[in-house]
Image (cartoon, rainbow over all chains, first blue to last red; front, side, top):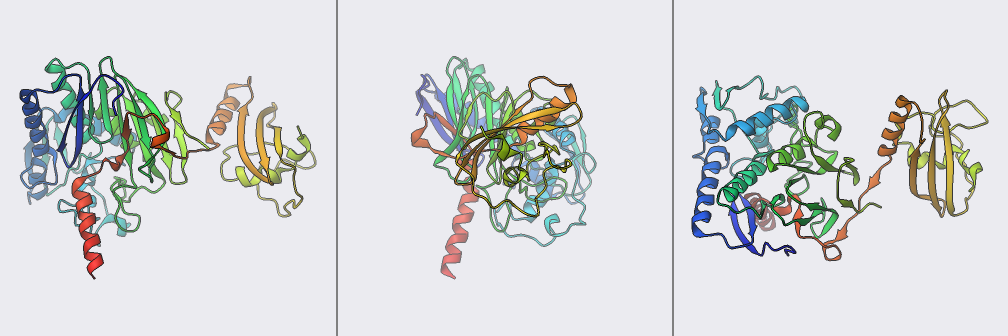
Length: 300
Length: 143
């Protein structure tokens, strides 16, 4: 339902979810092809859901090894380093192992394994800063480790796609990776903040212009008692008190990473390092917003 | 305005007890400042509907906050807390944090009632995950 002049919507599926790229003129086949090639490259590096990815080979190498990621990994891993520090380790790409043990594995078995940290309070959960060695884009491991970039990966792909569009001289666009949205150019768009438990409702709106917004919620991907996909990197426990977050920042990488970090720390803490605005909803439907949030919330 | 009512902390307790990070927001003239704790002998009178405003005084300066409340059928329907306009920095910081801590609770509006271009939420969903859930549902149905 575009109200701006970006009437051409190119819809496709990528990294397991639906995407839409809205532009003034339809994308050419050349541009589409370039986008899909780049997406495939991204998926082949970072997806833990396919056996032929770099991440999968790191997860299955019994004695570890040295793995070189592409240059695009630098902004992603650098952000993870910062978020890991700001959240005292609660945002951690090595949470992949615990996600798998709770059932969010590459087969989506959704069966829990009793050795998960969630069931074993004394279990030592892996740590990004001590259990893996990173020098720029080279990662060295000494045992199988599952890297999960879900906290910021989709946002990053939104940025990568946006950069291709700009490189192709498409300066007015909206890239929507299912709730992780980036806008550029003269157009703007009203974003509805989806109600965490009722997808036909919104709890507020915000105007997006030349920025990115990323949303994160725990109620959609859940299976079993209190199990969902946002795990605390220190304990392997699914977060219970925060149920939805939105962050608005200059890039979708940042917005996505911050939306995840907000499950674990307050916006004030993150504002020590980053410029953004945000909304958080707790399980009792209380909401917390930053002073600079420019939108509207429907409060009682 | 009925200030007397607000000298009785009982009315504020149900709403505020879980939320305060300040102690002693409102002083009872009749006794020492105990902070807002559940009272052993709750007031069982009925209260008139209406809007009430009270000033909670605390601290040595003293500082104060203004609390505006709407009362209906004996239930607090709405609470608004306003910090003191001029004060020393520390106290004001606490007041502002307190004001932020009084919860705003969000409710939903149907998307048909609101002008929205796109939705940001995570129902955009993960195809693989949803397929898995569907399969499990199918299996569960057969058992």
